[in-house]
Length: 200
Length: 75
Image (cartoon, rainbow over all chains, first blue to last red; front, side, top):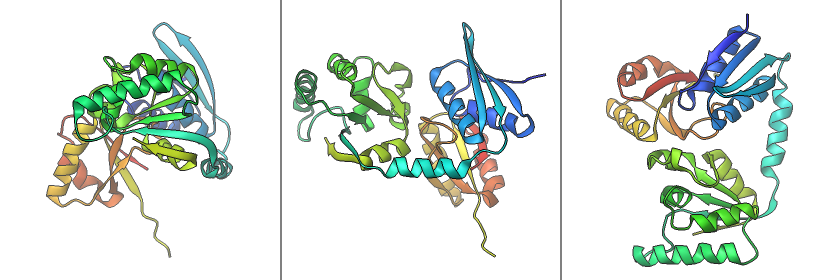
């Protein structure tokens, strides 16, 4: 019988840990998750472990079947990752590390931020990536004063990245209205791979 | 022979709980390091505490009753 890991309702990173443990003693497992992030994490686990993946979306969860396919080719994967991570991309990355623009007066800073995002949404060129750190993540969440402009930028193709640790710290993970959640590894890579990184 | 250090990650539900646990290990003098959760475990869950595998038992004893304690996994 197929070994089942029901990871619905579990918070990150528990689904991956439970699936990893199940793969130690089974060649084929079924993992059930209830959100897209957990699904992405399980898929990444499958790649790392050299498993094939098949998915089925049901009303009560995402059903993922992982099956081992011999030995994972970790060496070539690491090499591929290294090449990818060291390549300089012709990208402009913007880092927003607070919810106001500039230091000095926060009322003025809030106004400047609104004005800044309006300008960004209205005029070319747009940045390729915007990374939101610390209180900057508040701009991506419910009640953000610049949400409309941020969503326009996203539609135009700008990648919006919210720091997961920061969203967690401010208890805003389930209030994200634009962009995606990421980690320090990816943030570091994007900063260093970009042809220019502008810190605000 | 070269000795390869082996580490474990202590995971909590939230970053605030991890910060609290960081303080407790500091006070108890248990060697550790605050690091991002390794990417093979998750893409977005923030930070965890890395400890030397030799210190698993004492860390577990110090932290298992803290709210939000999730797991200790080998990394």
